Amino acid sequence: MDPASLLYTESHEWIEAEGDVRRVGISEHAQQMLGDIVYVEMPRVGMRVKRGDELATVESPKAAASVYAPVSGEVVEVNDALDAAPGTINASPCGEGWLAAIRPDDFAGERAGLLDHAAYLTKLEEE
Image 1 (cartoon, rainbow, N blue to C red):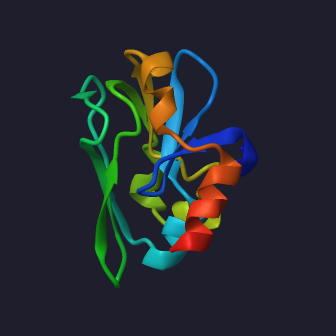
Image 2 (tube, one colour; image 1 turned 180 degrees about the vertical axis):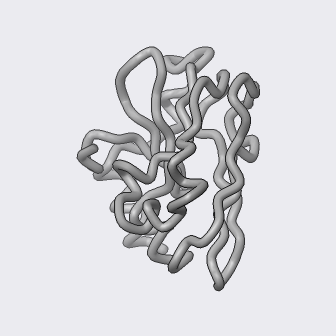
């Protein structure tokens, strides 16, 4: 996926901007800050999340970090390939390293709380 086509949270998660079901992952910046990811604790399919709830946990030798749901909805798919190859997040954080797919409850209502790519890059410059 093209990072410029995604929407972002201030806590460094991304979500696809289009579709009834949208993949979620962590940003390039987040994976760089964590370093080599060695373990991912995935959500379970069918789990309901509210925006800001912990969705997953990613671990590196440096730290463990929570990944938060960028929108409210139902987890309808998880990226099981990460069980065997968590480093895929480092290699392709906005592509093959996606974590889960969510069917949003009210994407239009929660859209205002997300950043487009340009706004996210501006936020990173301010950190």
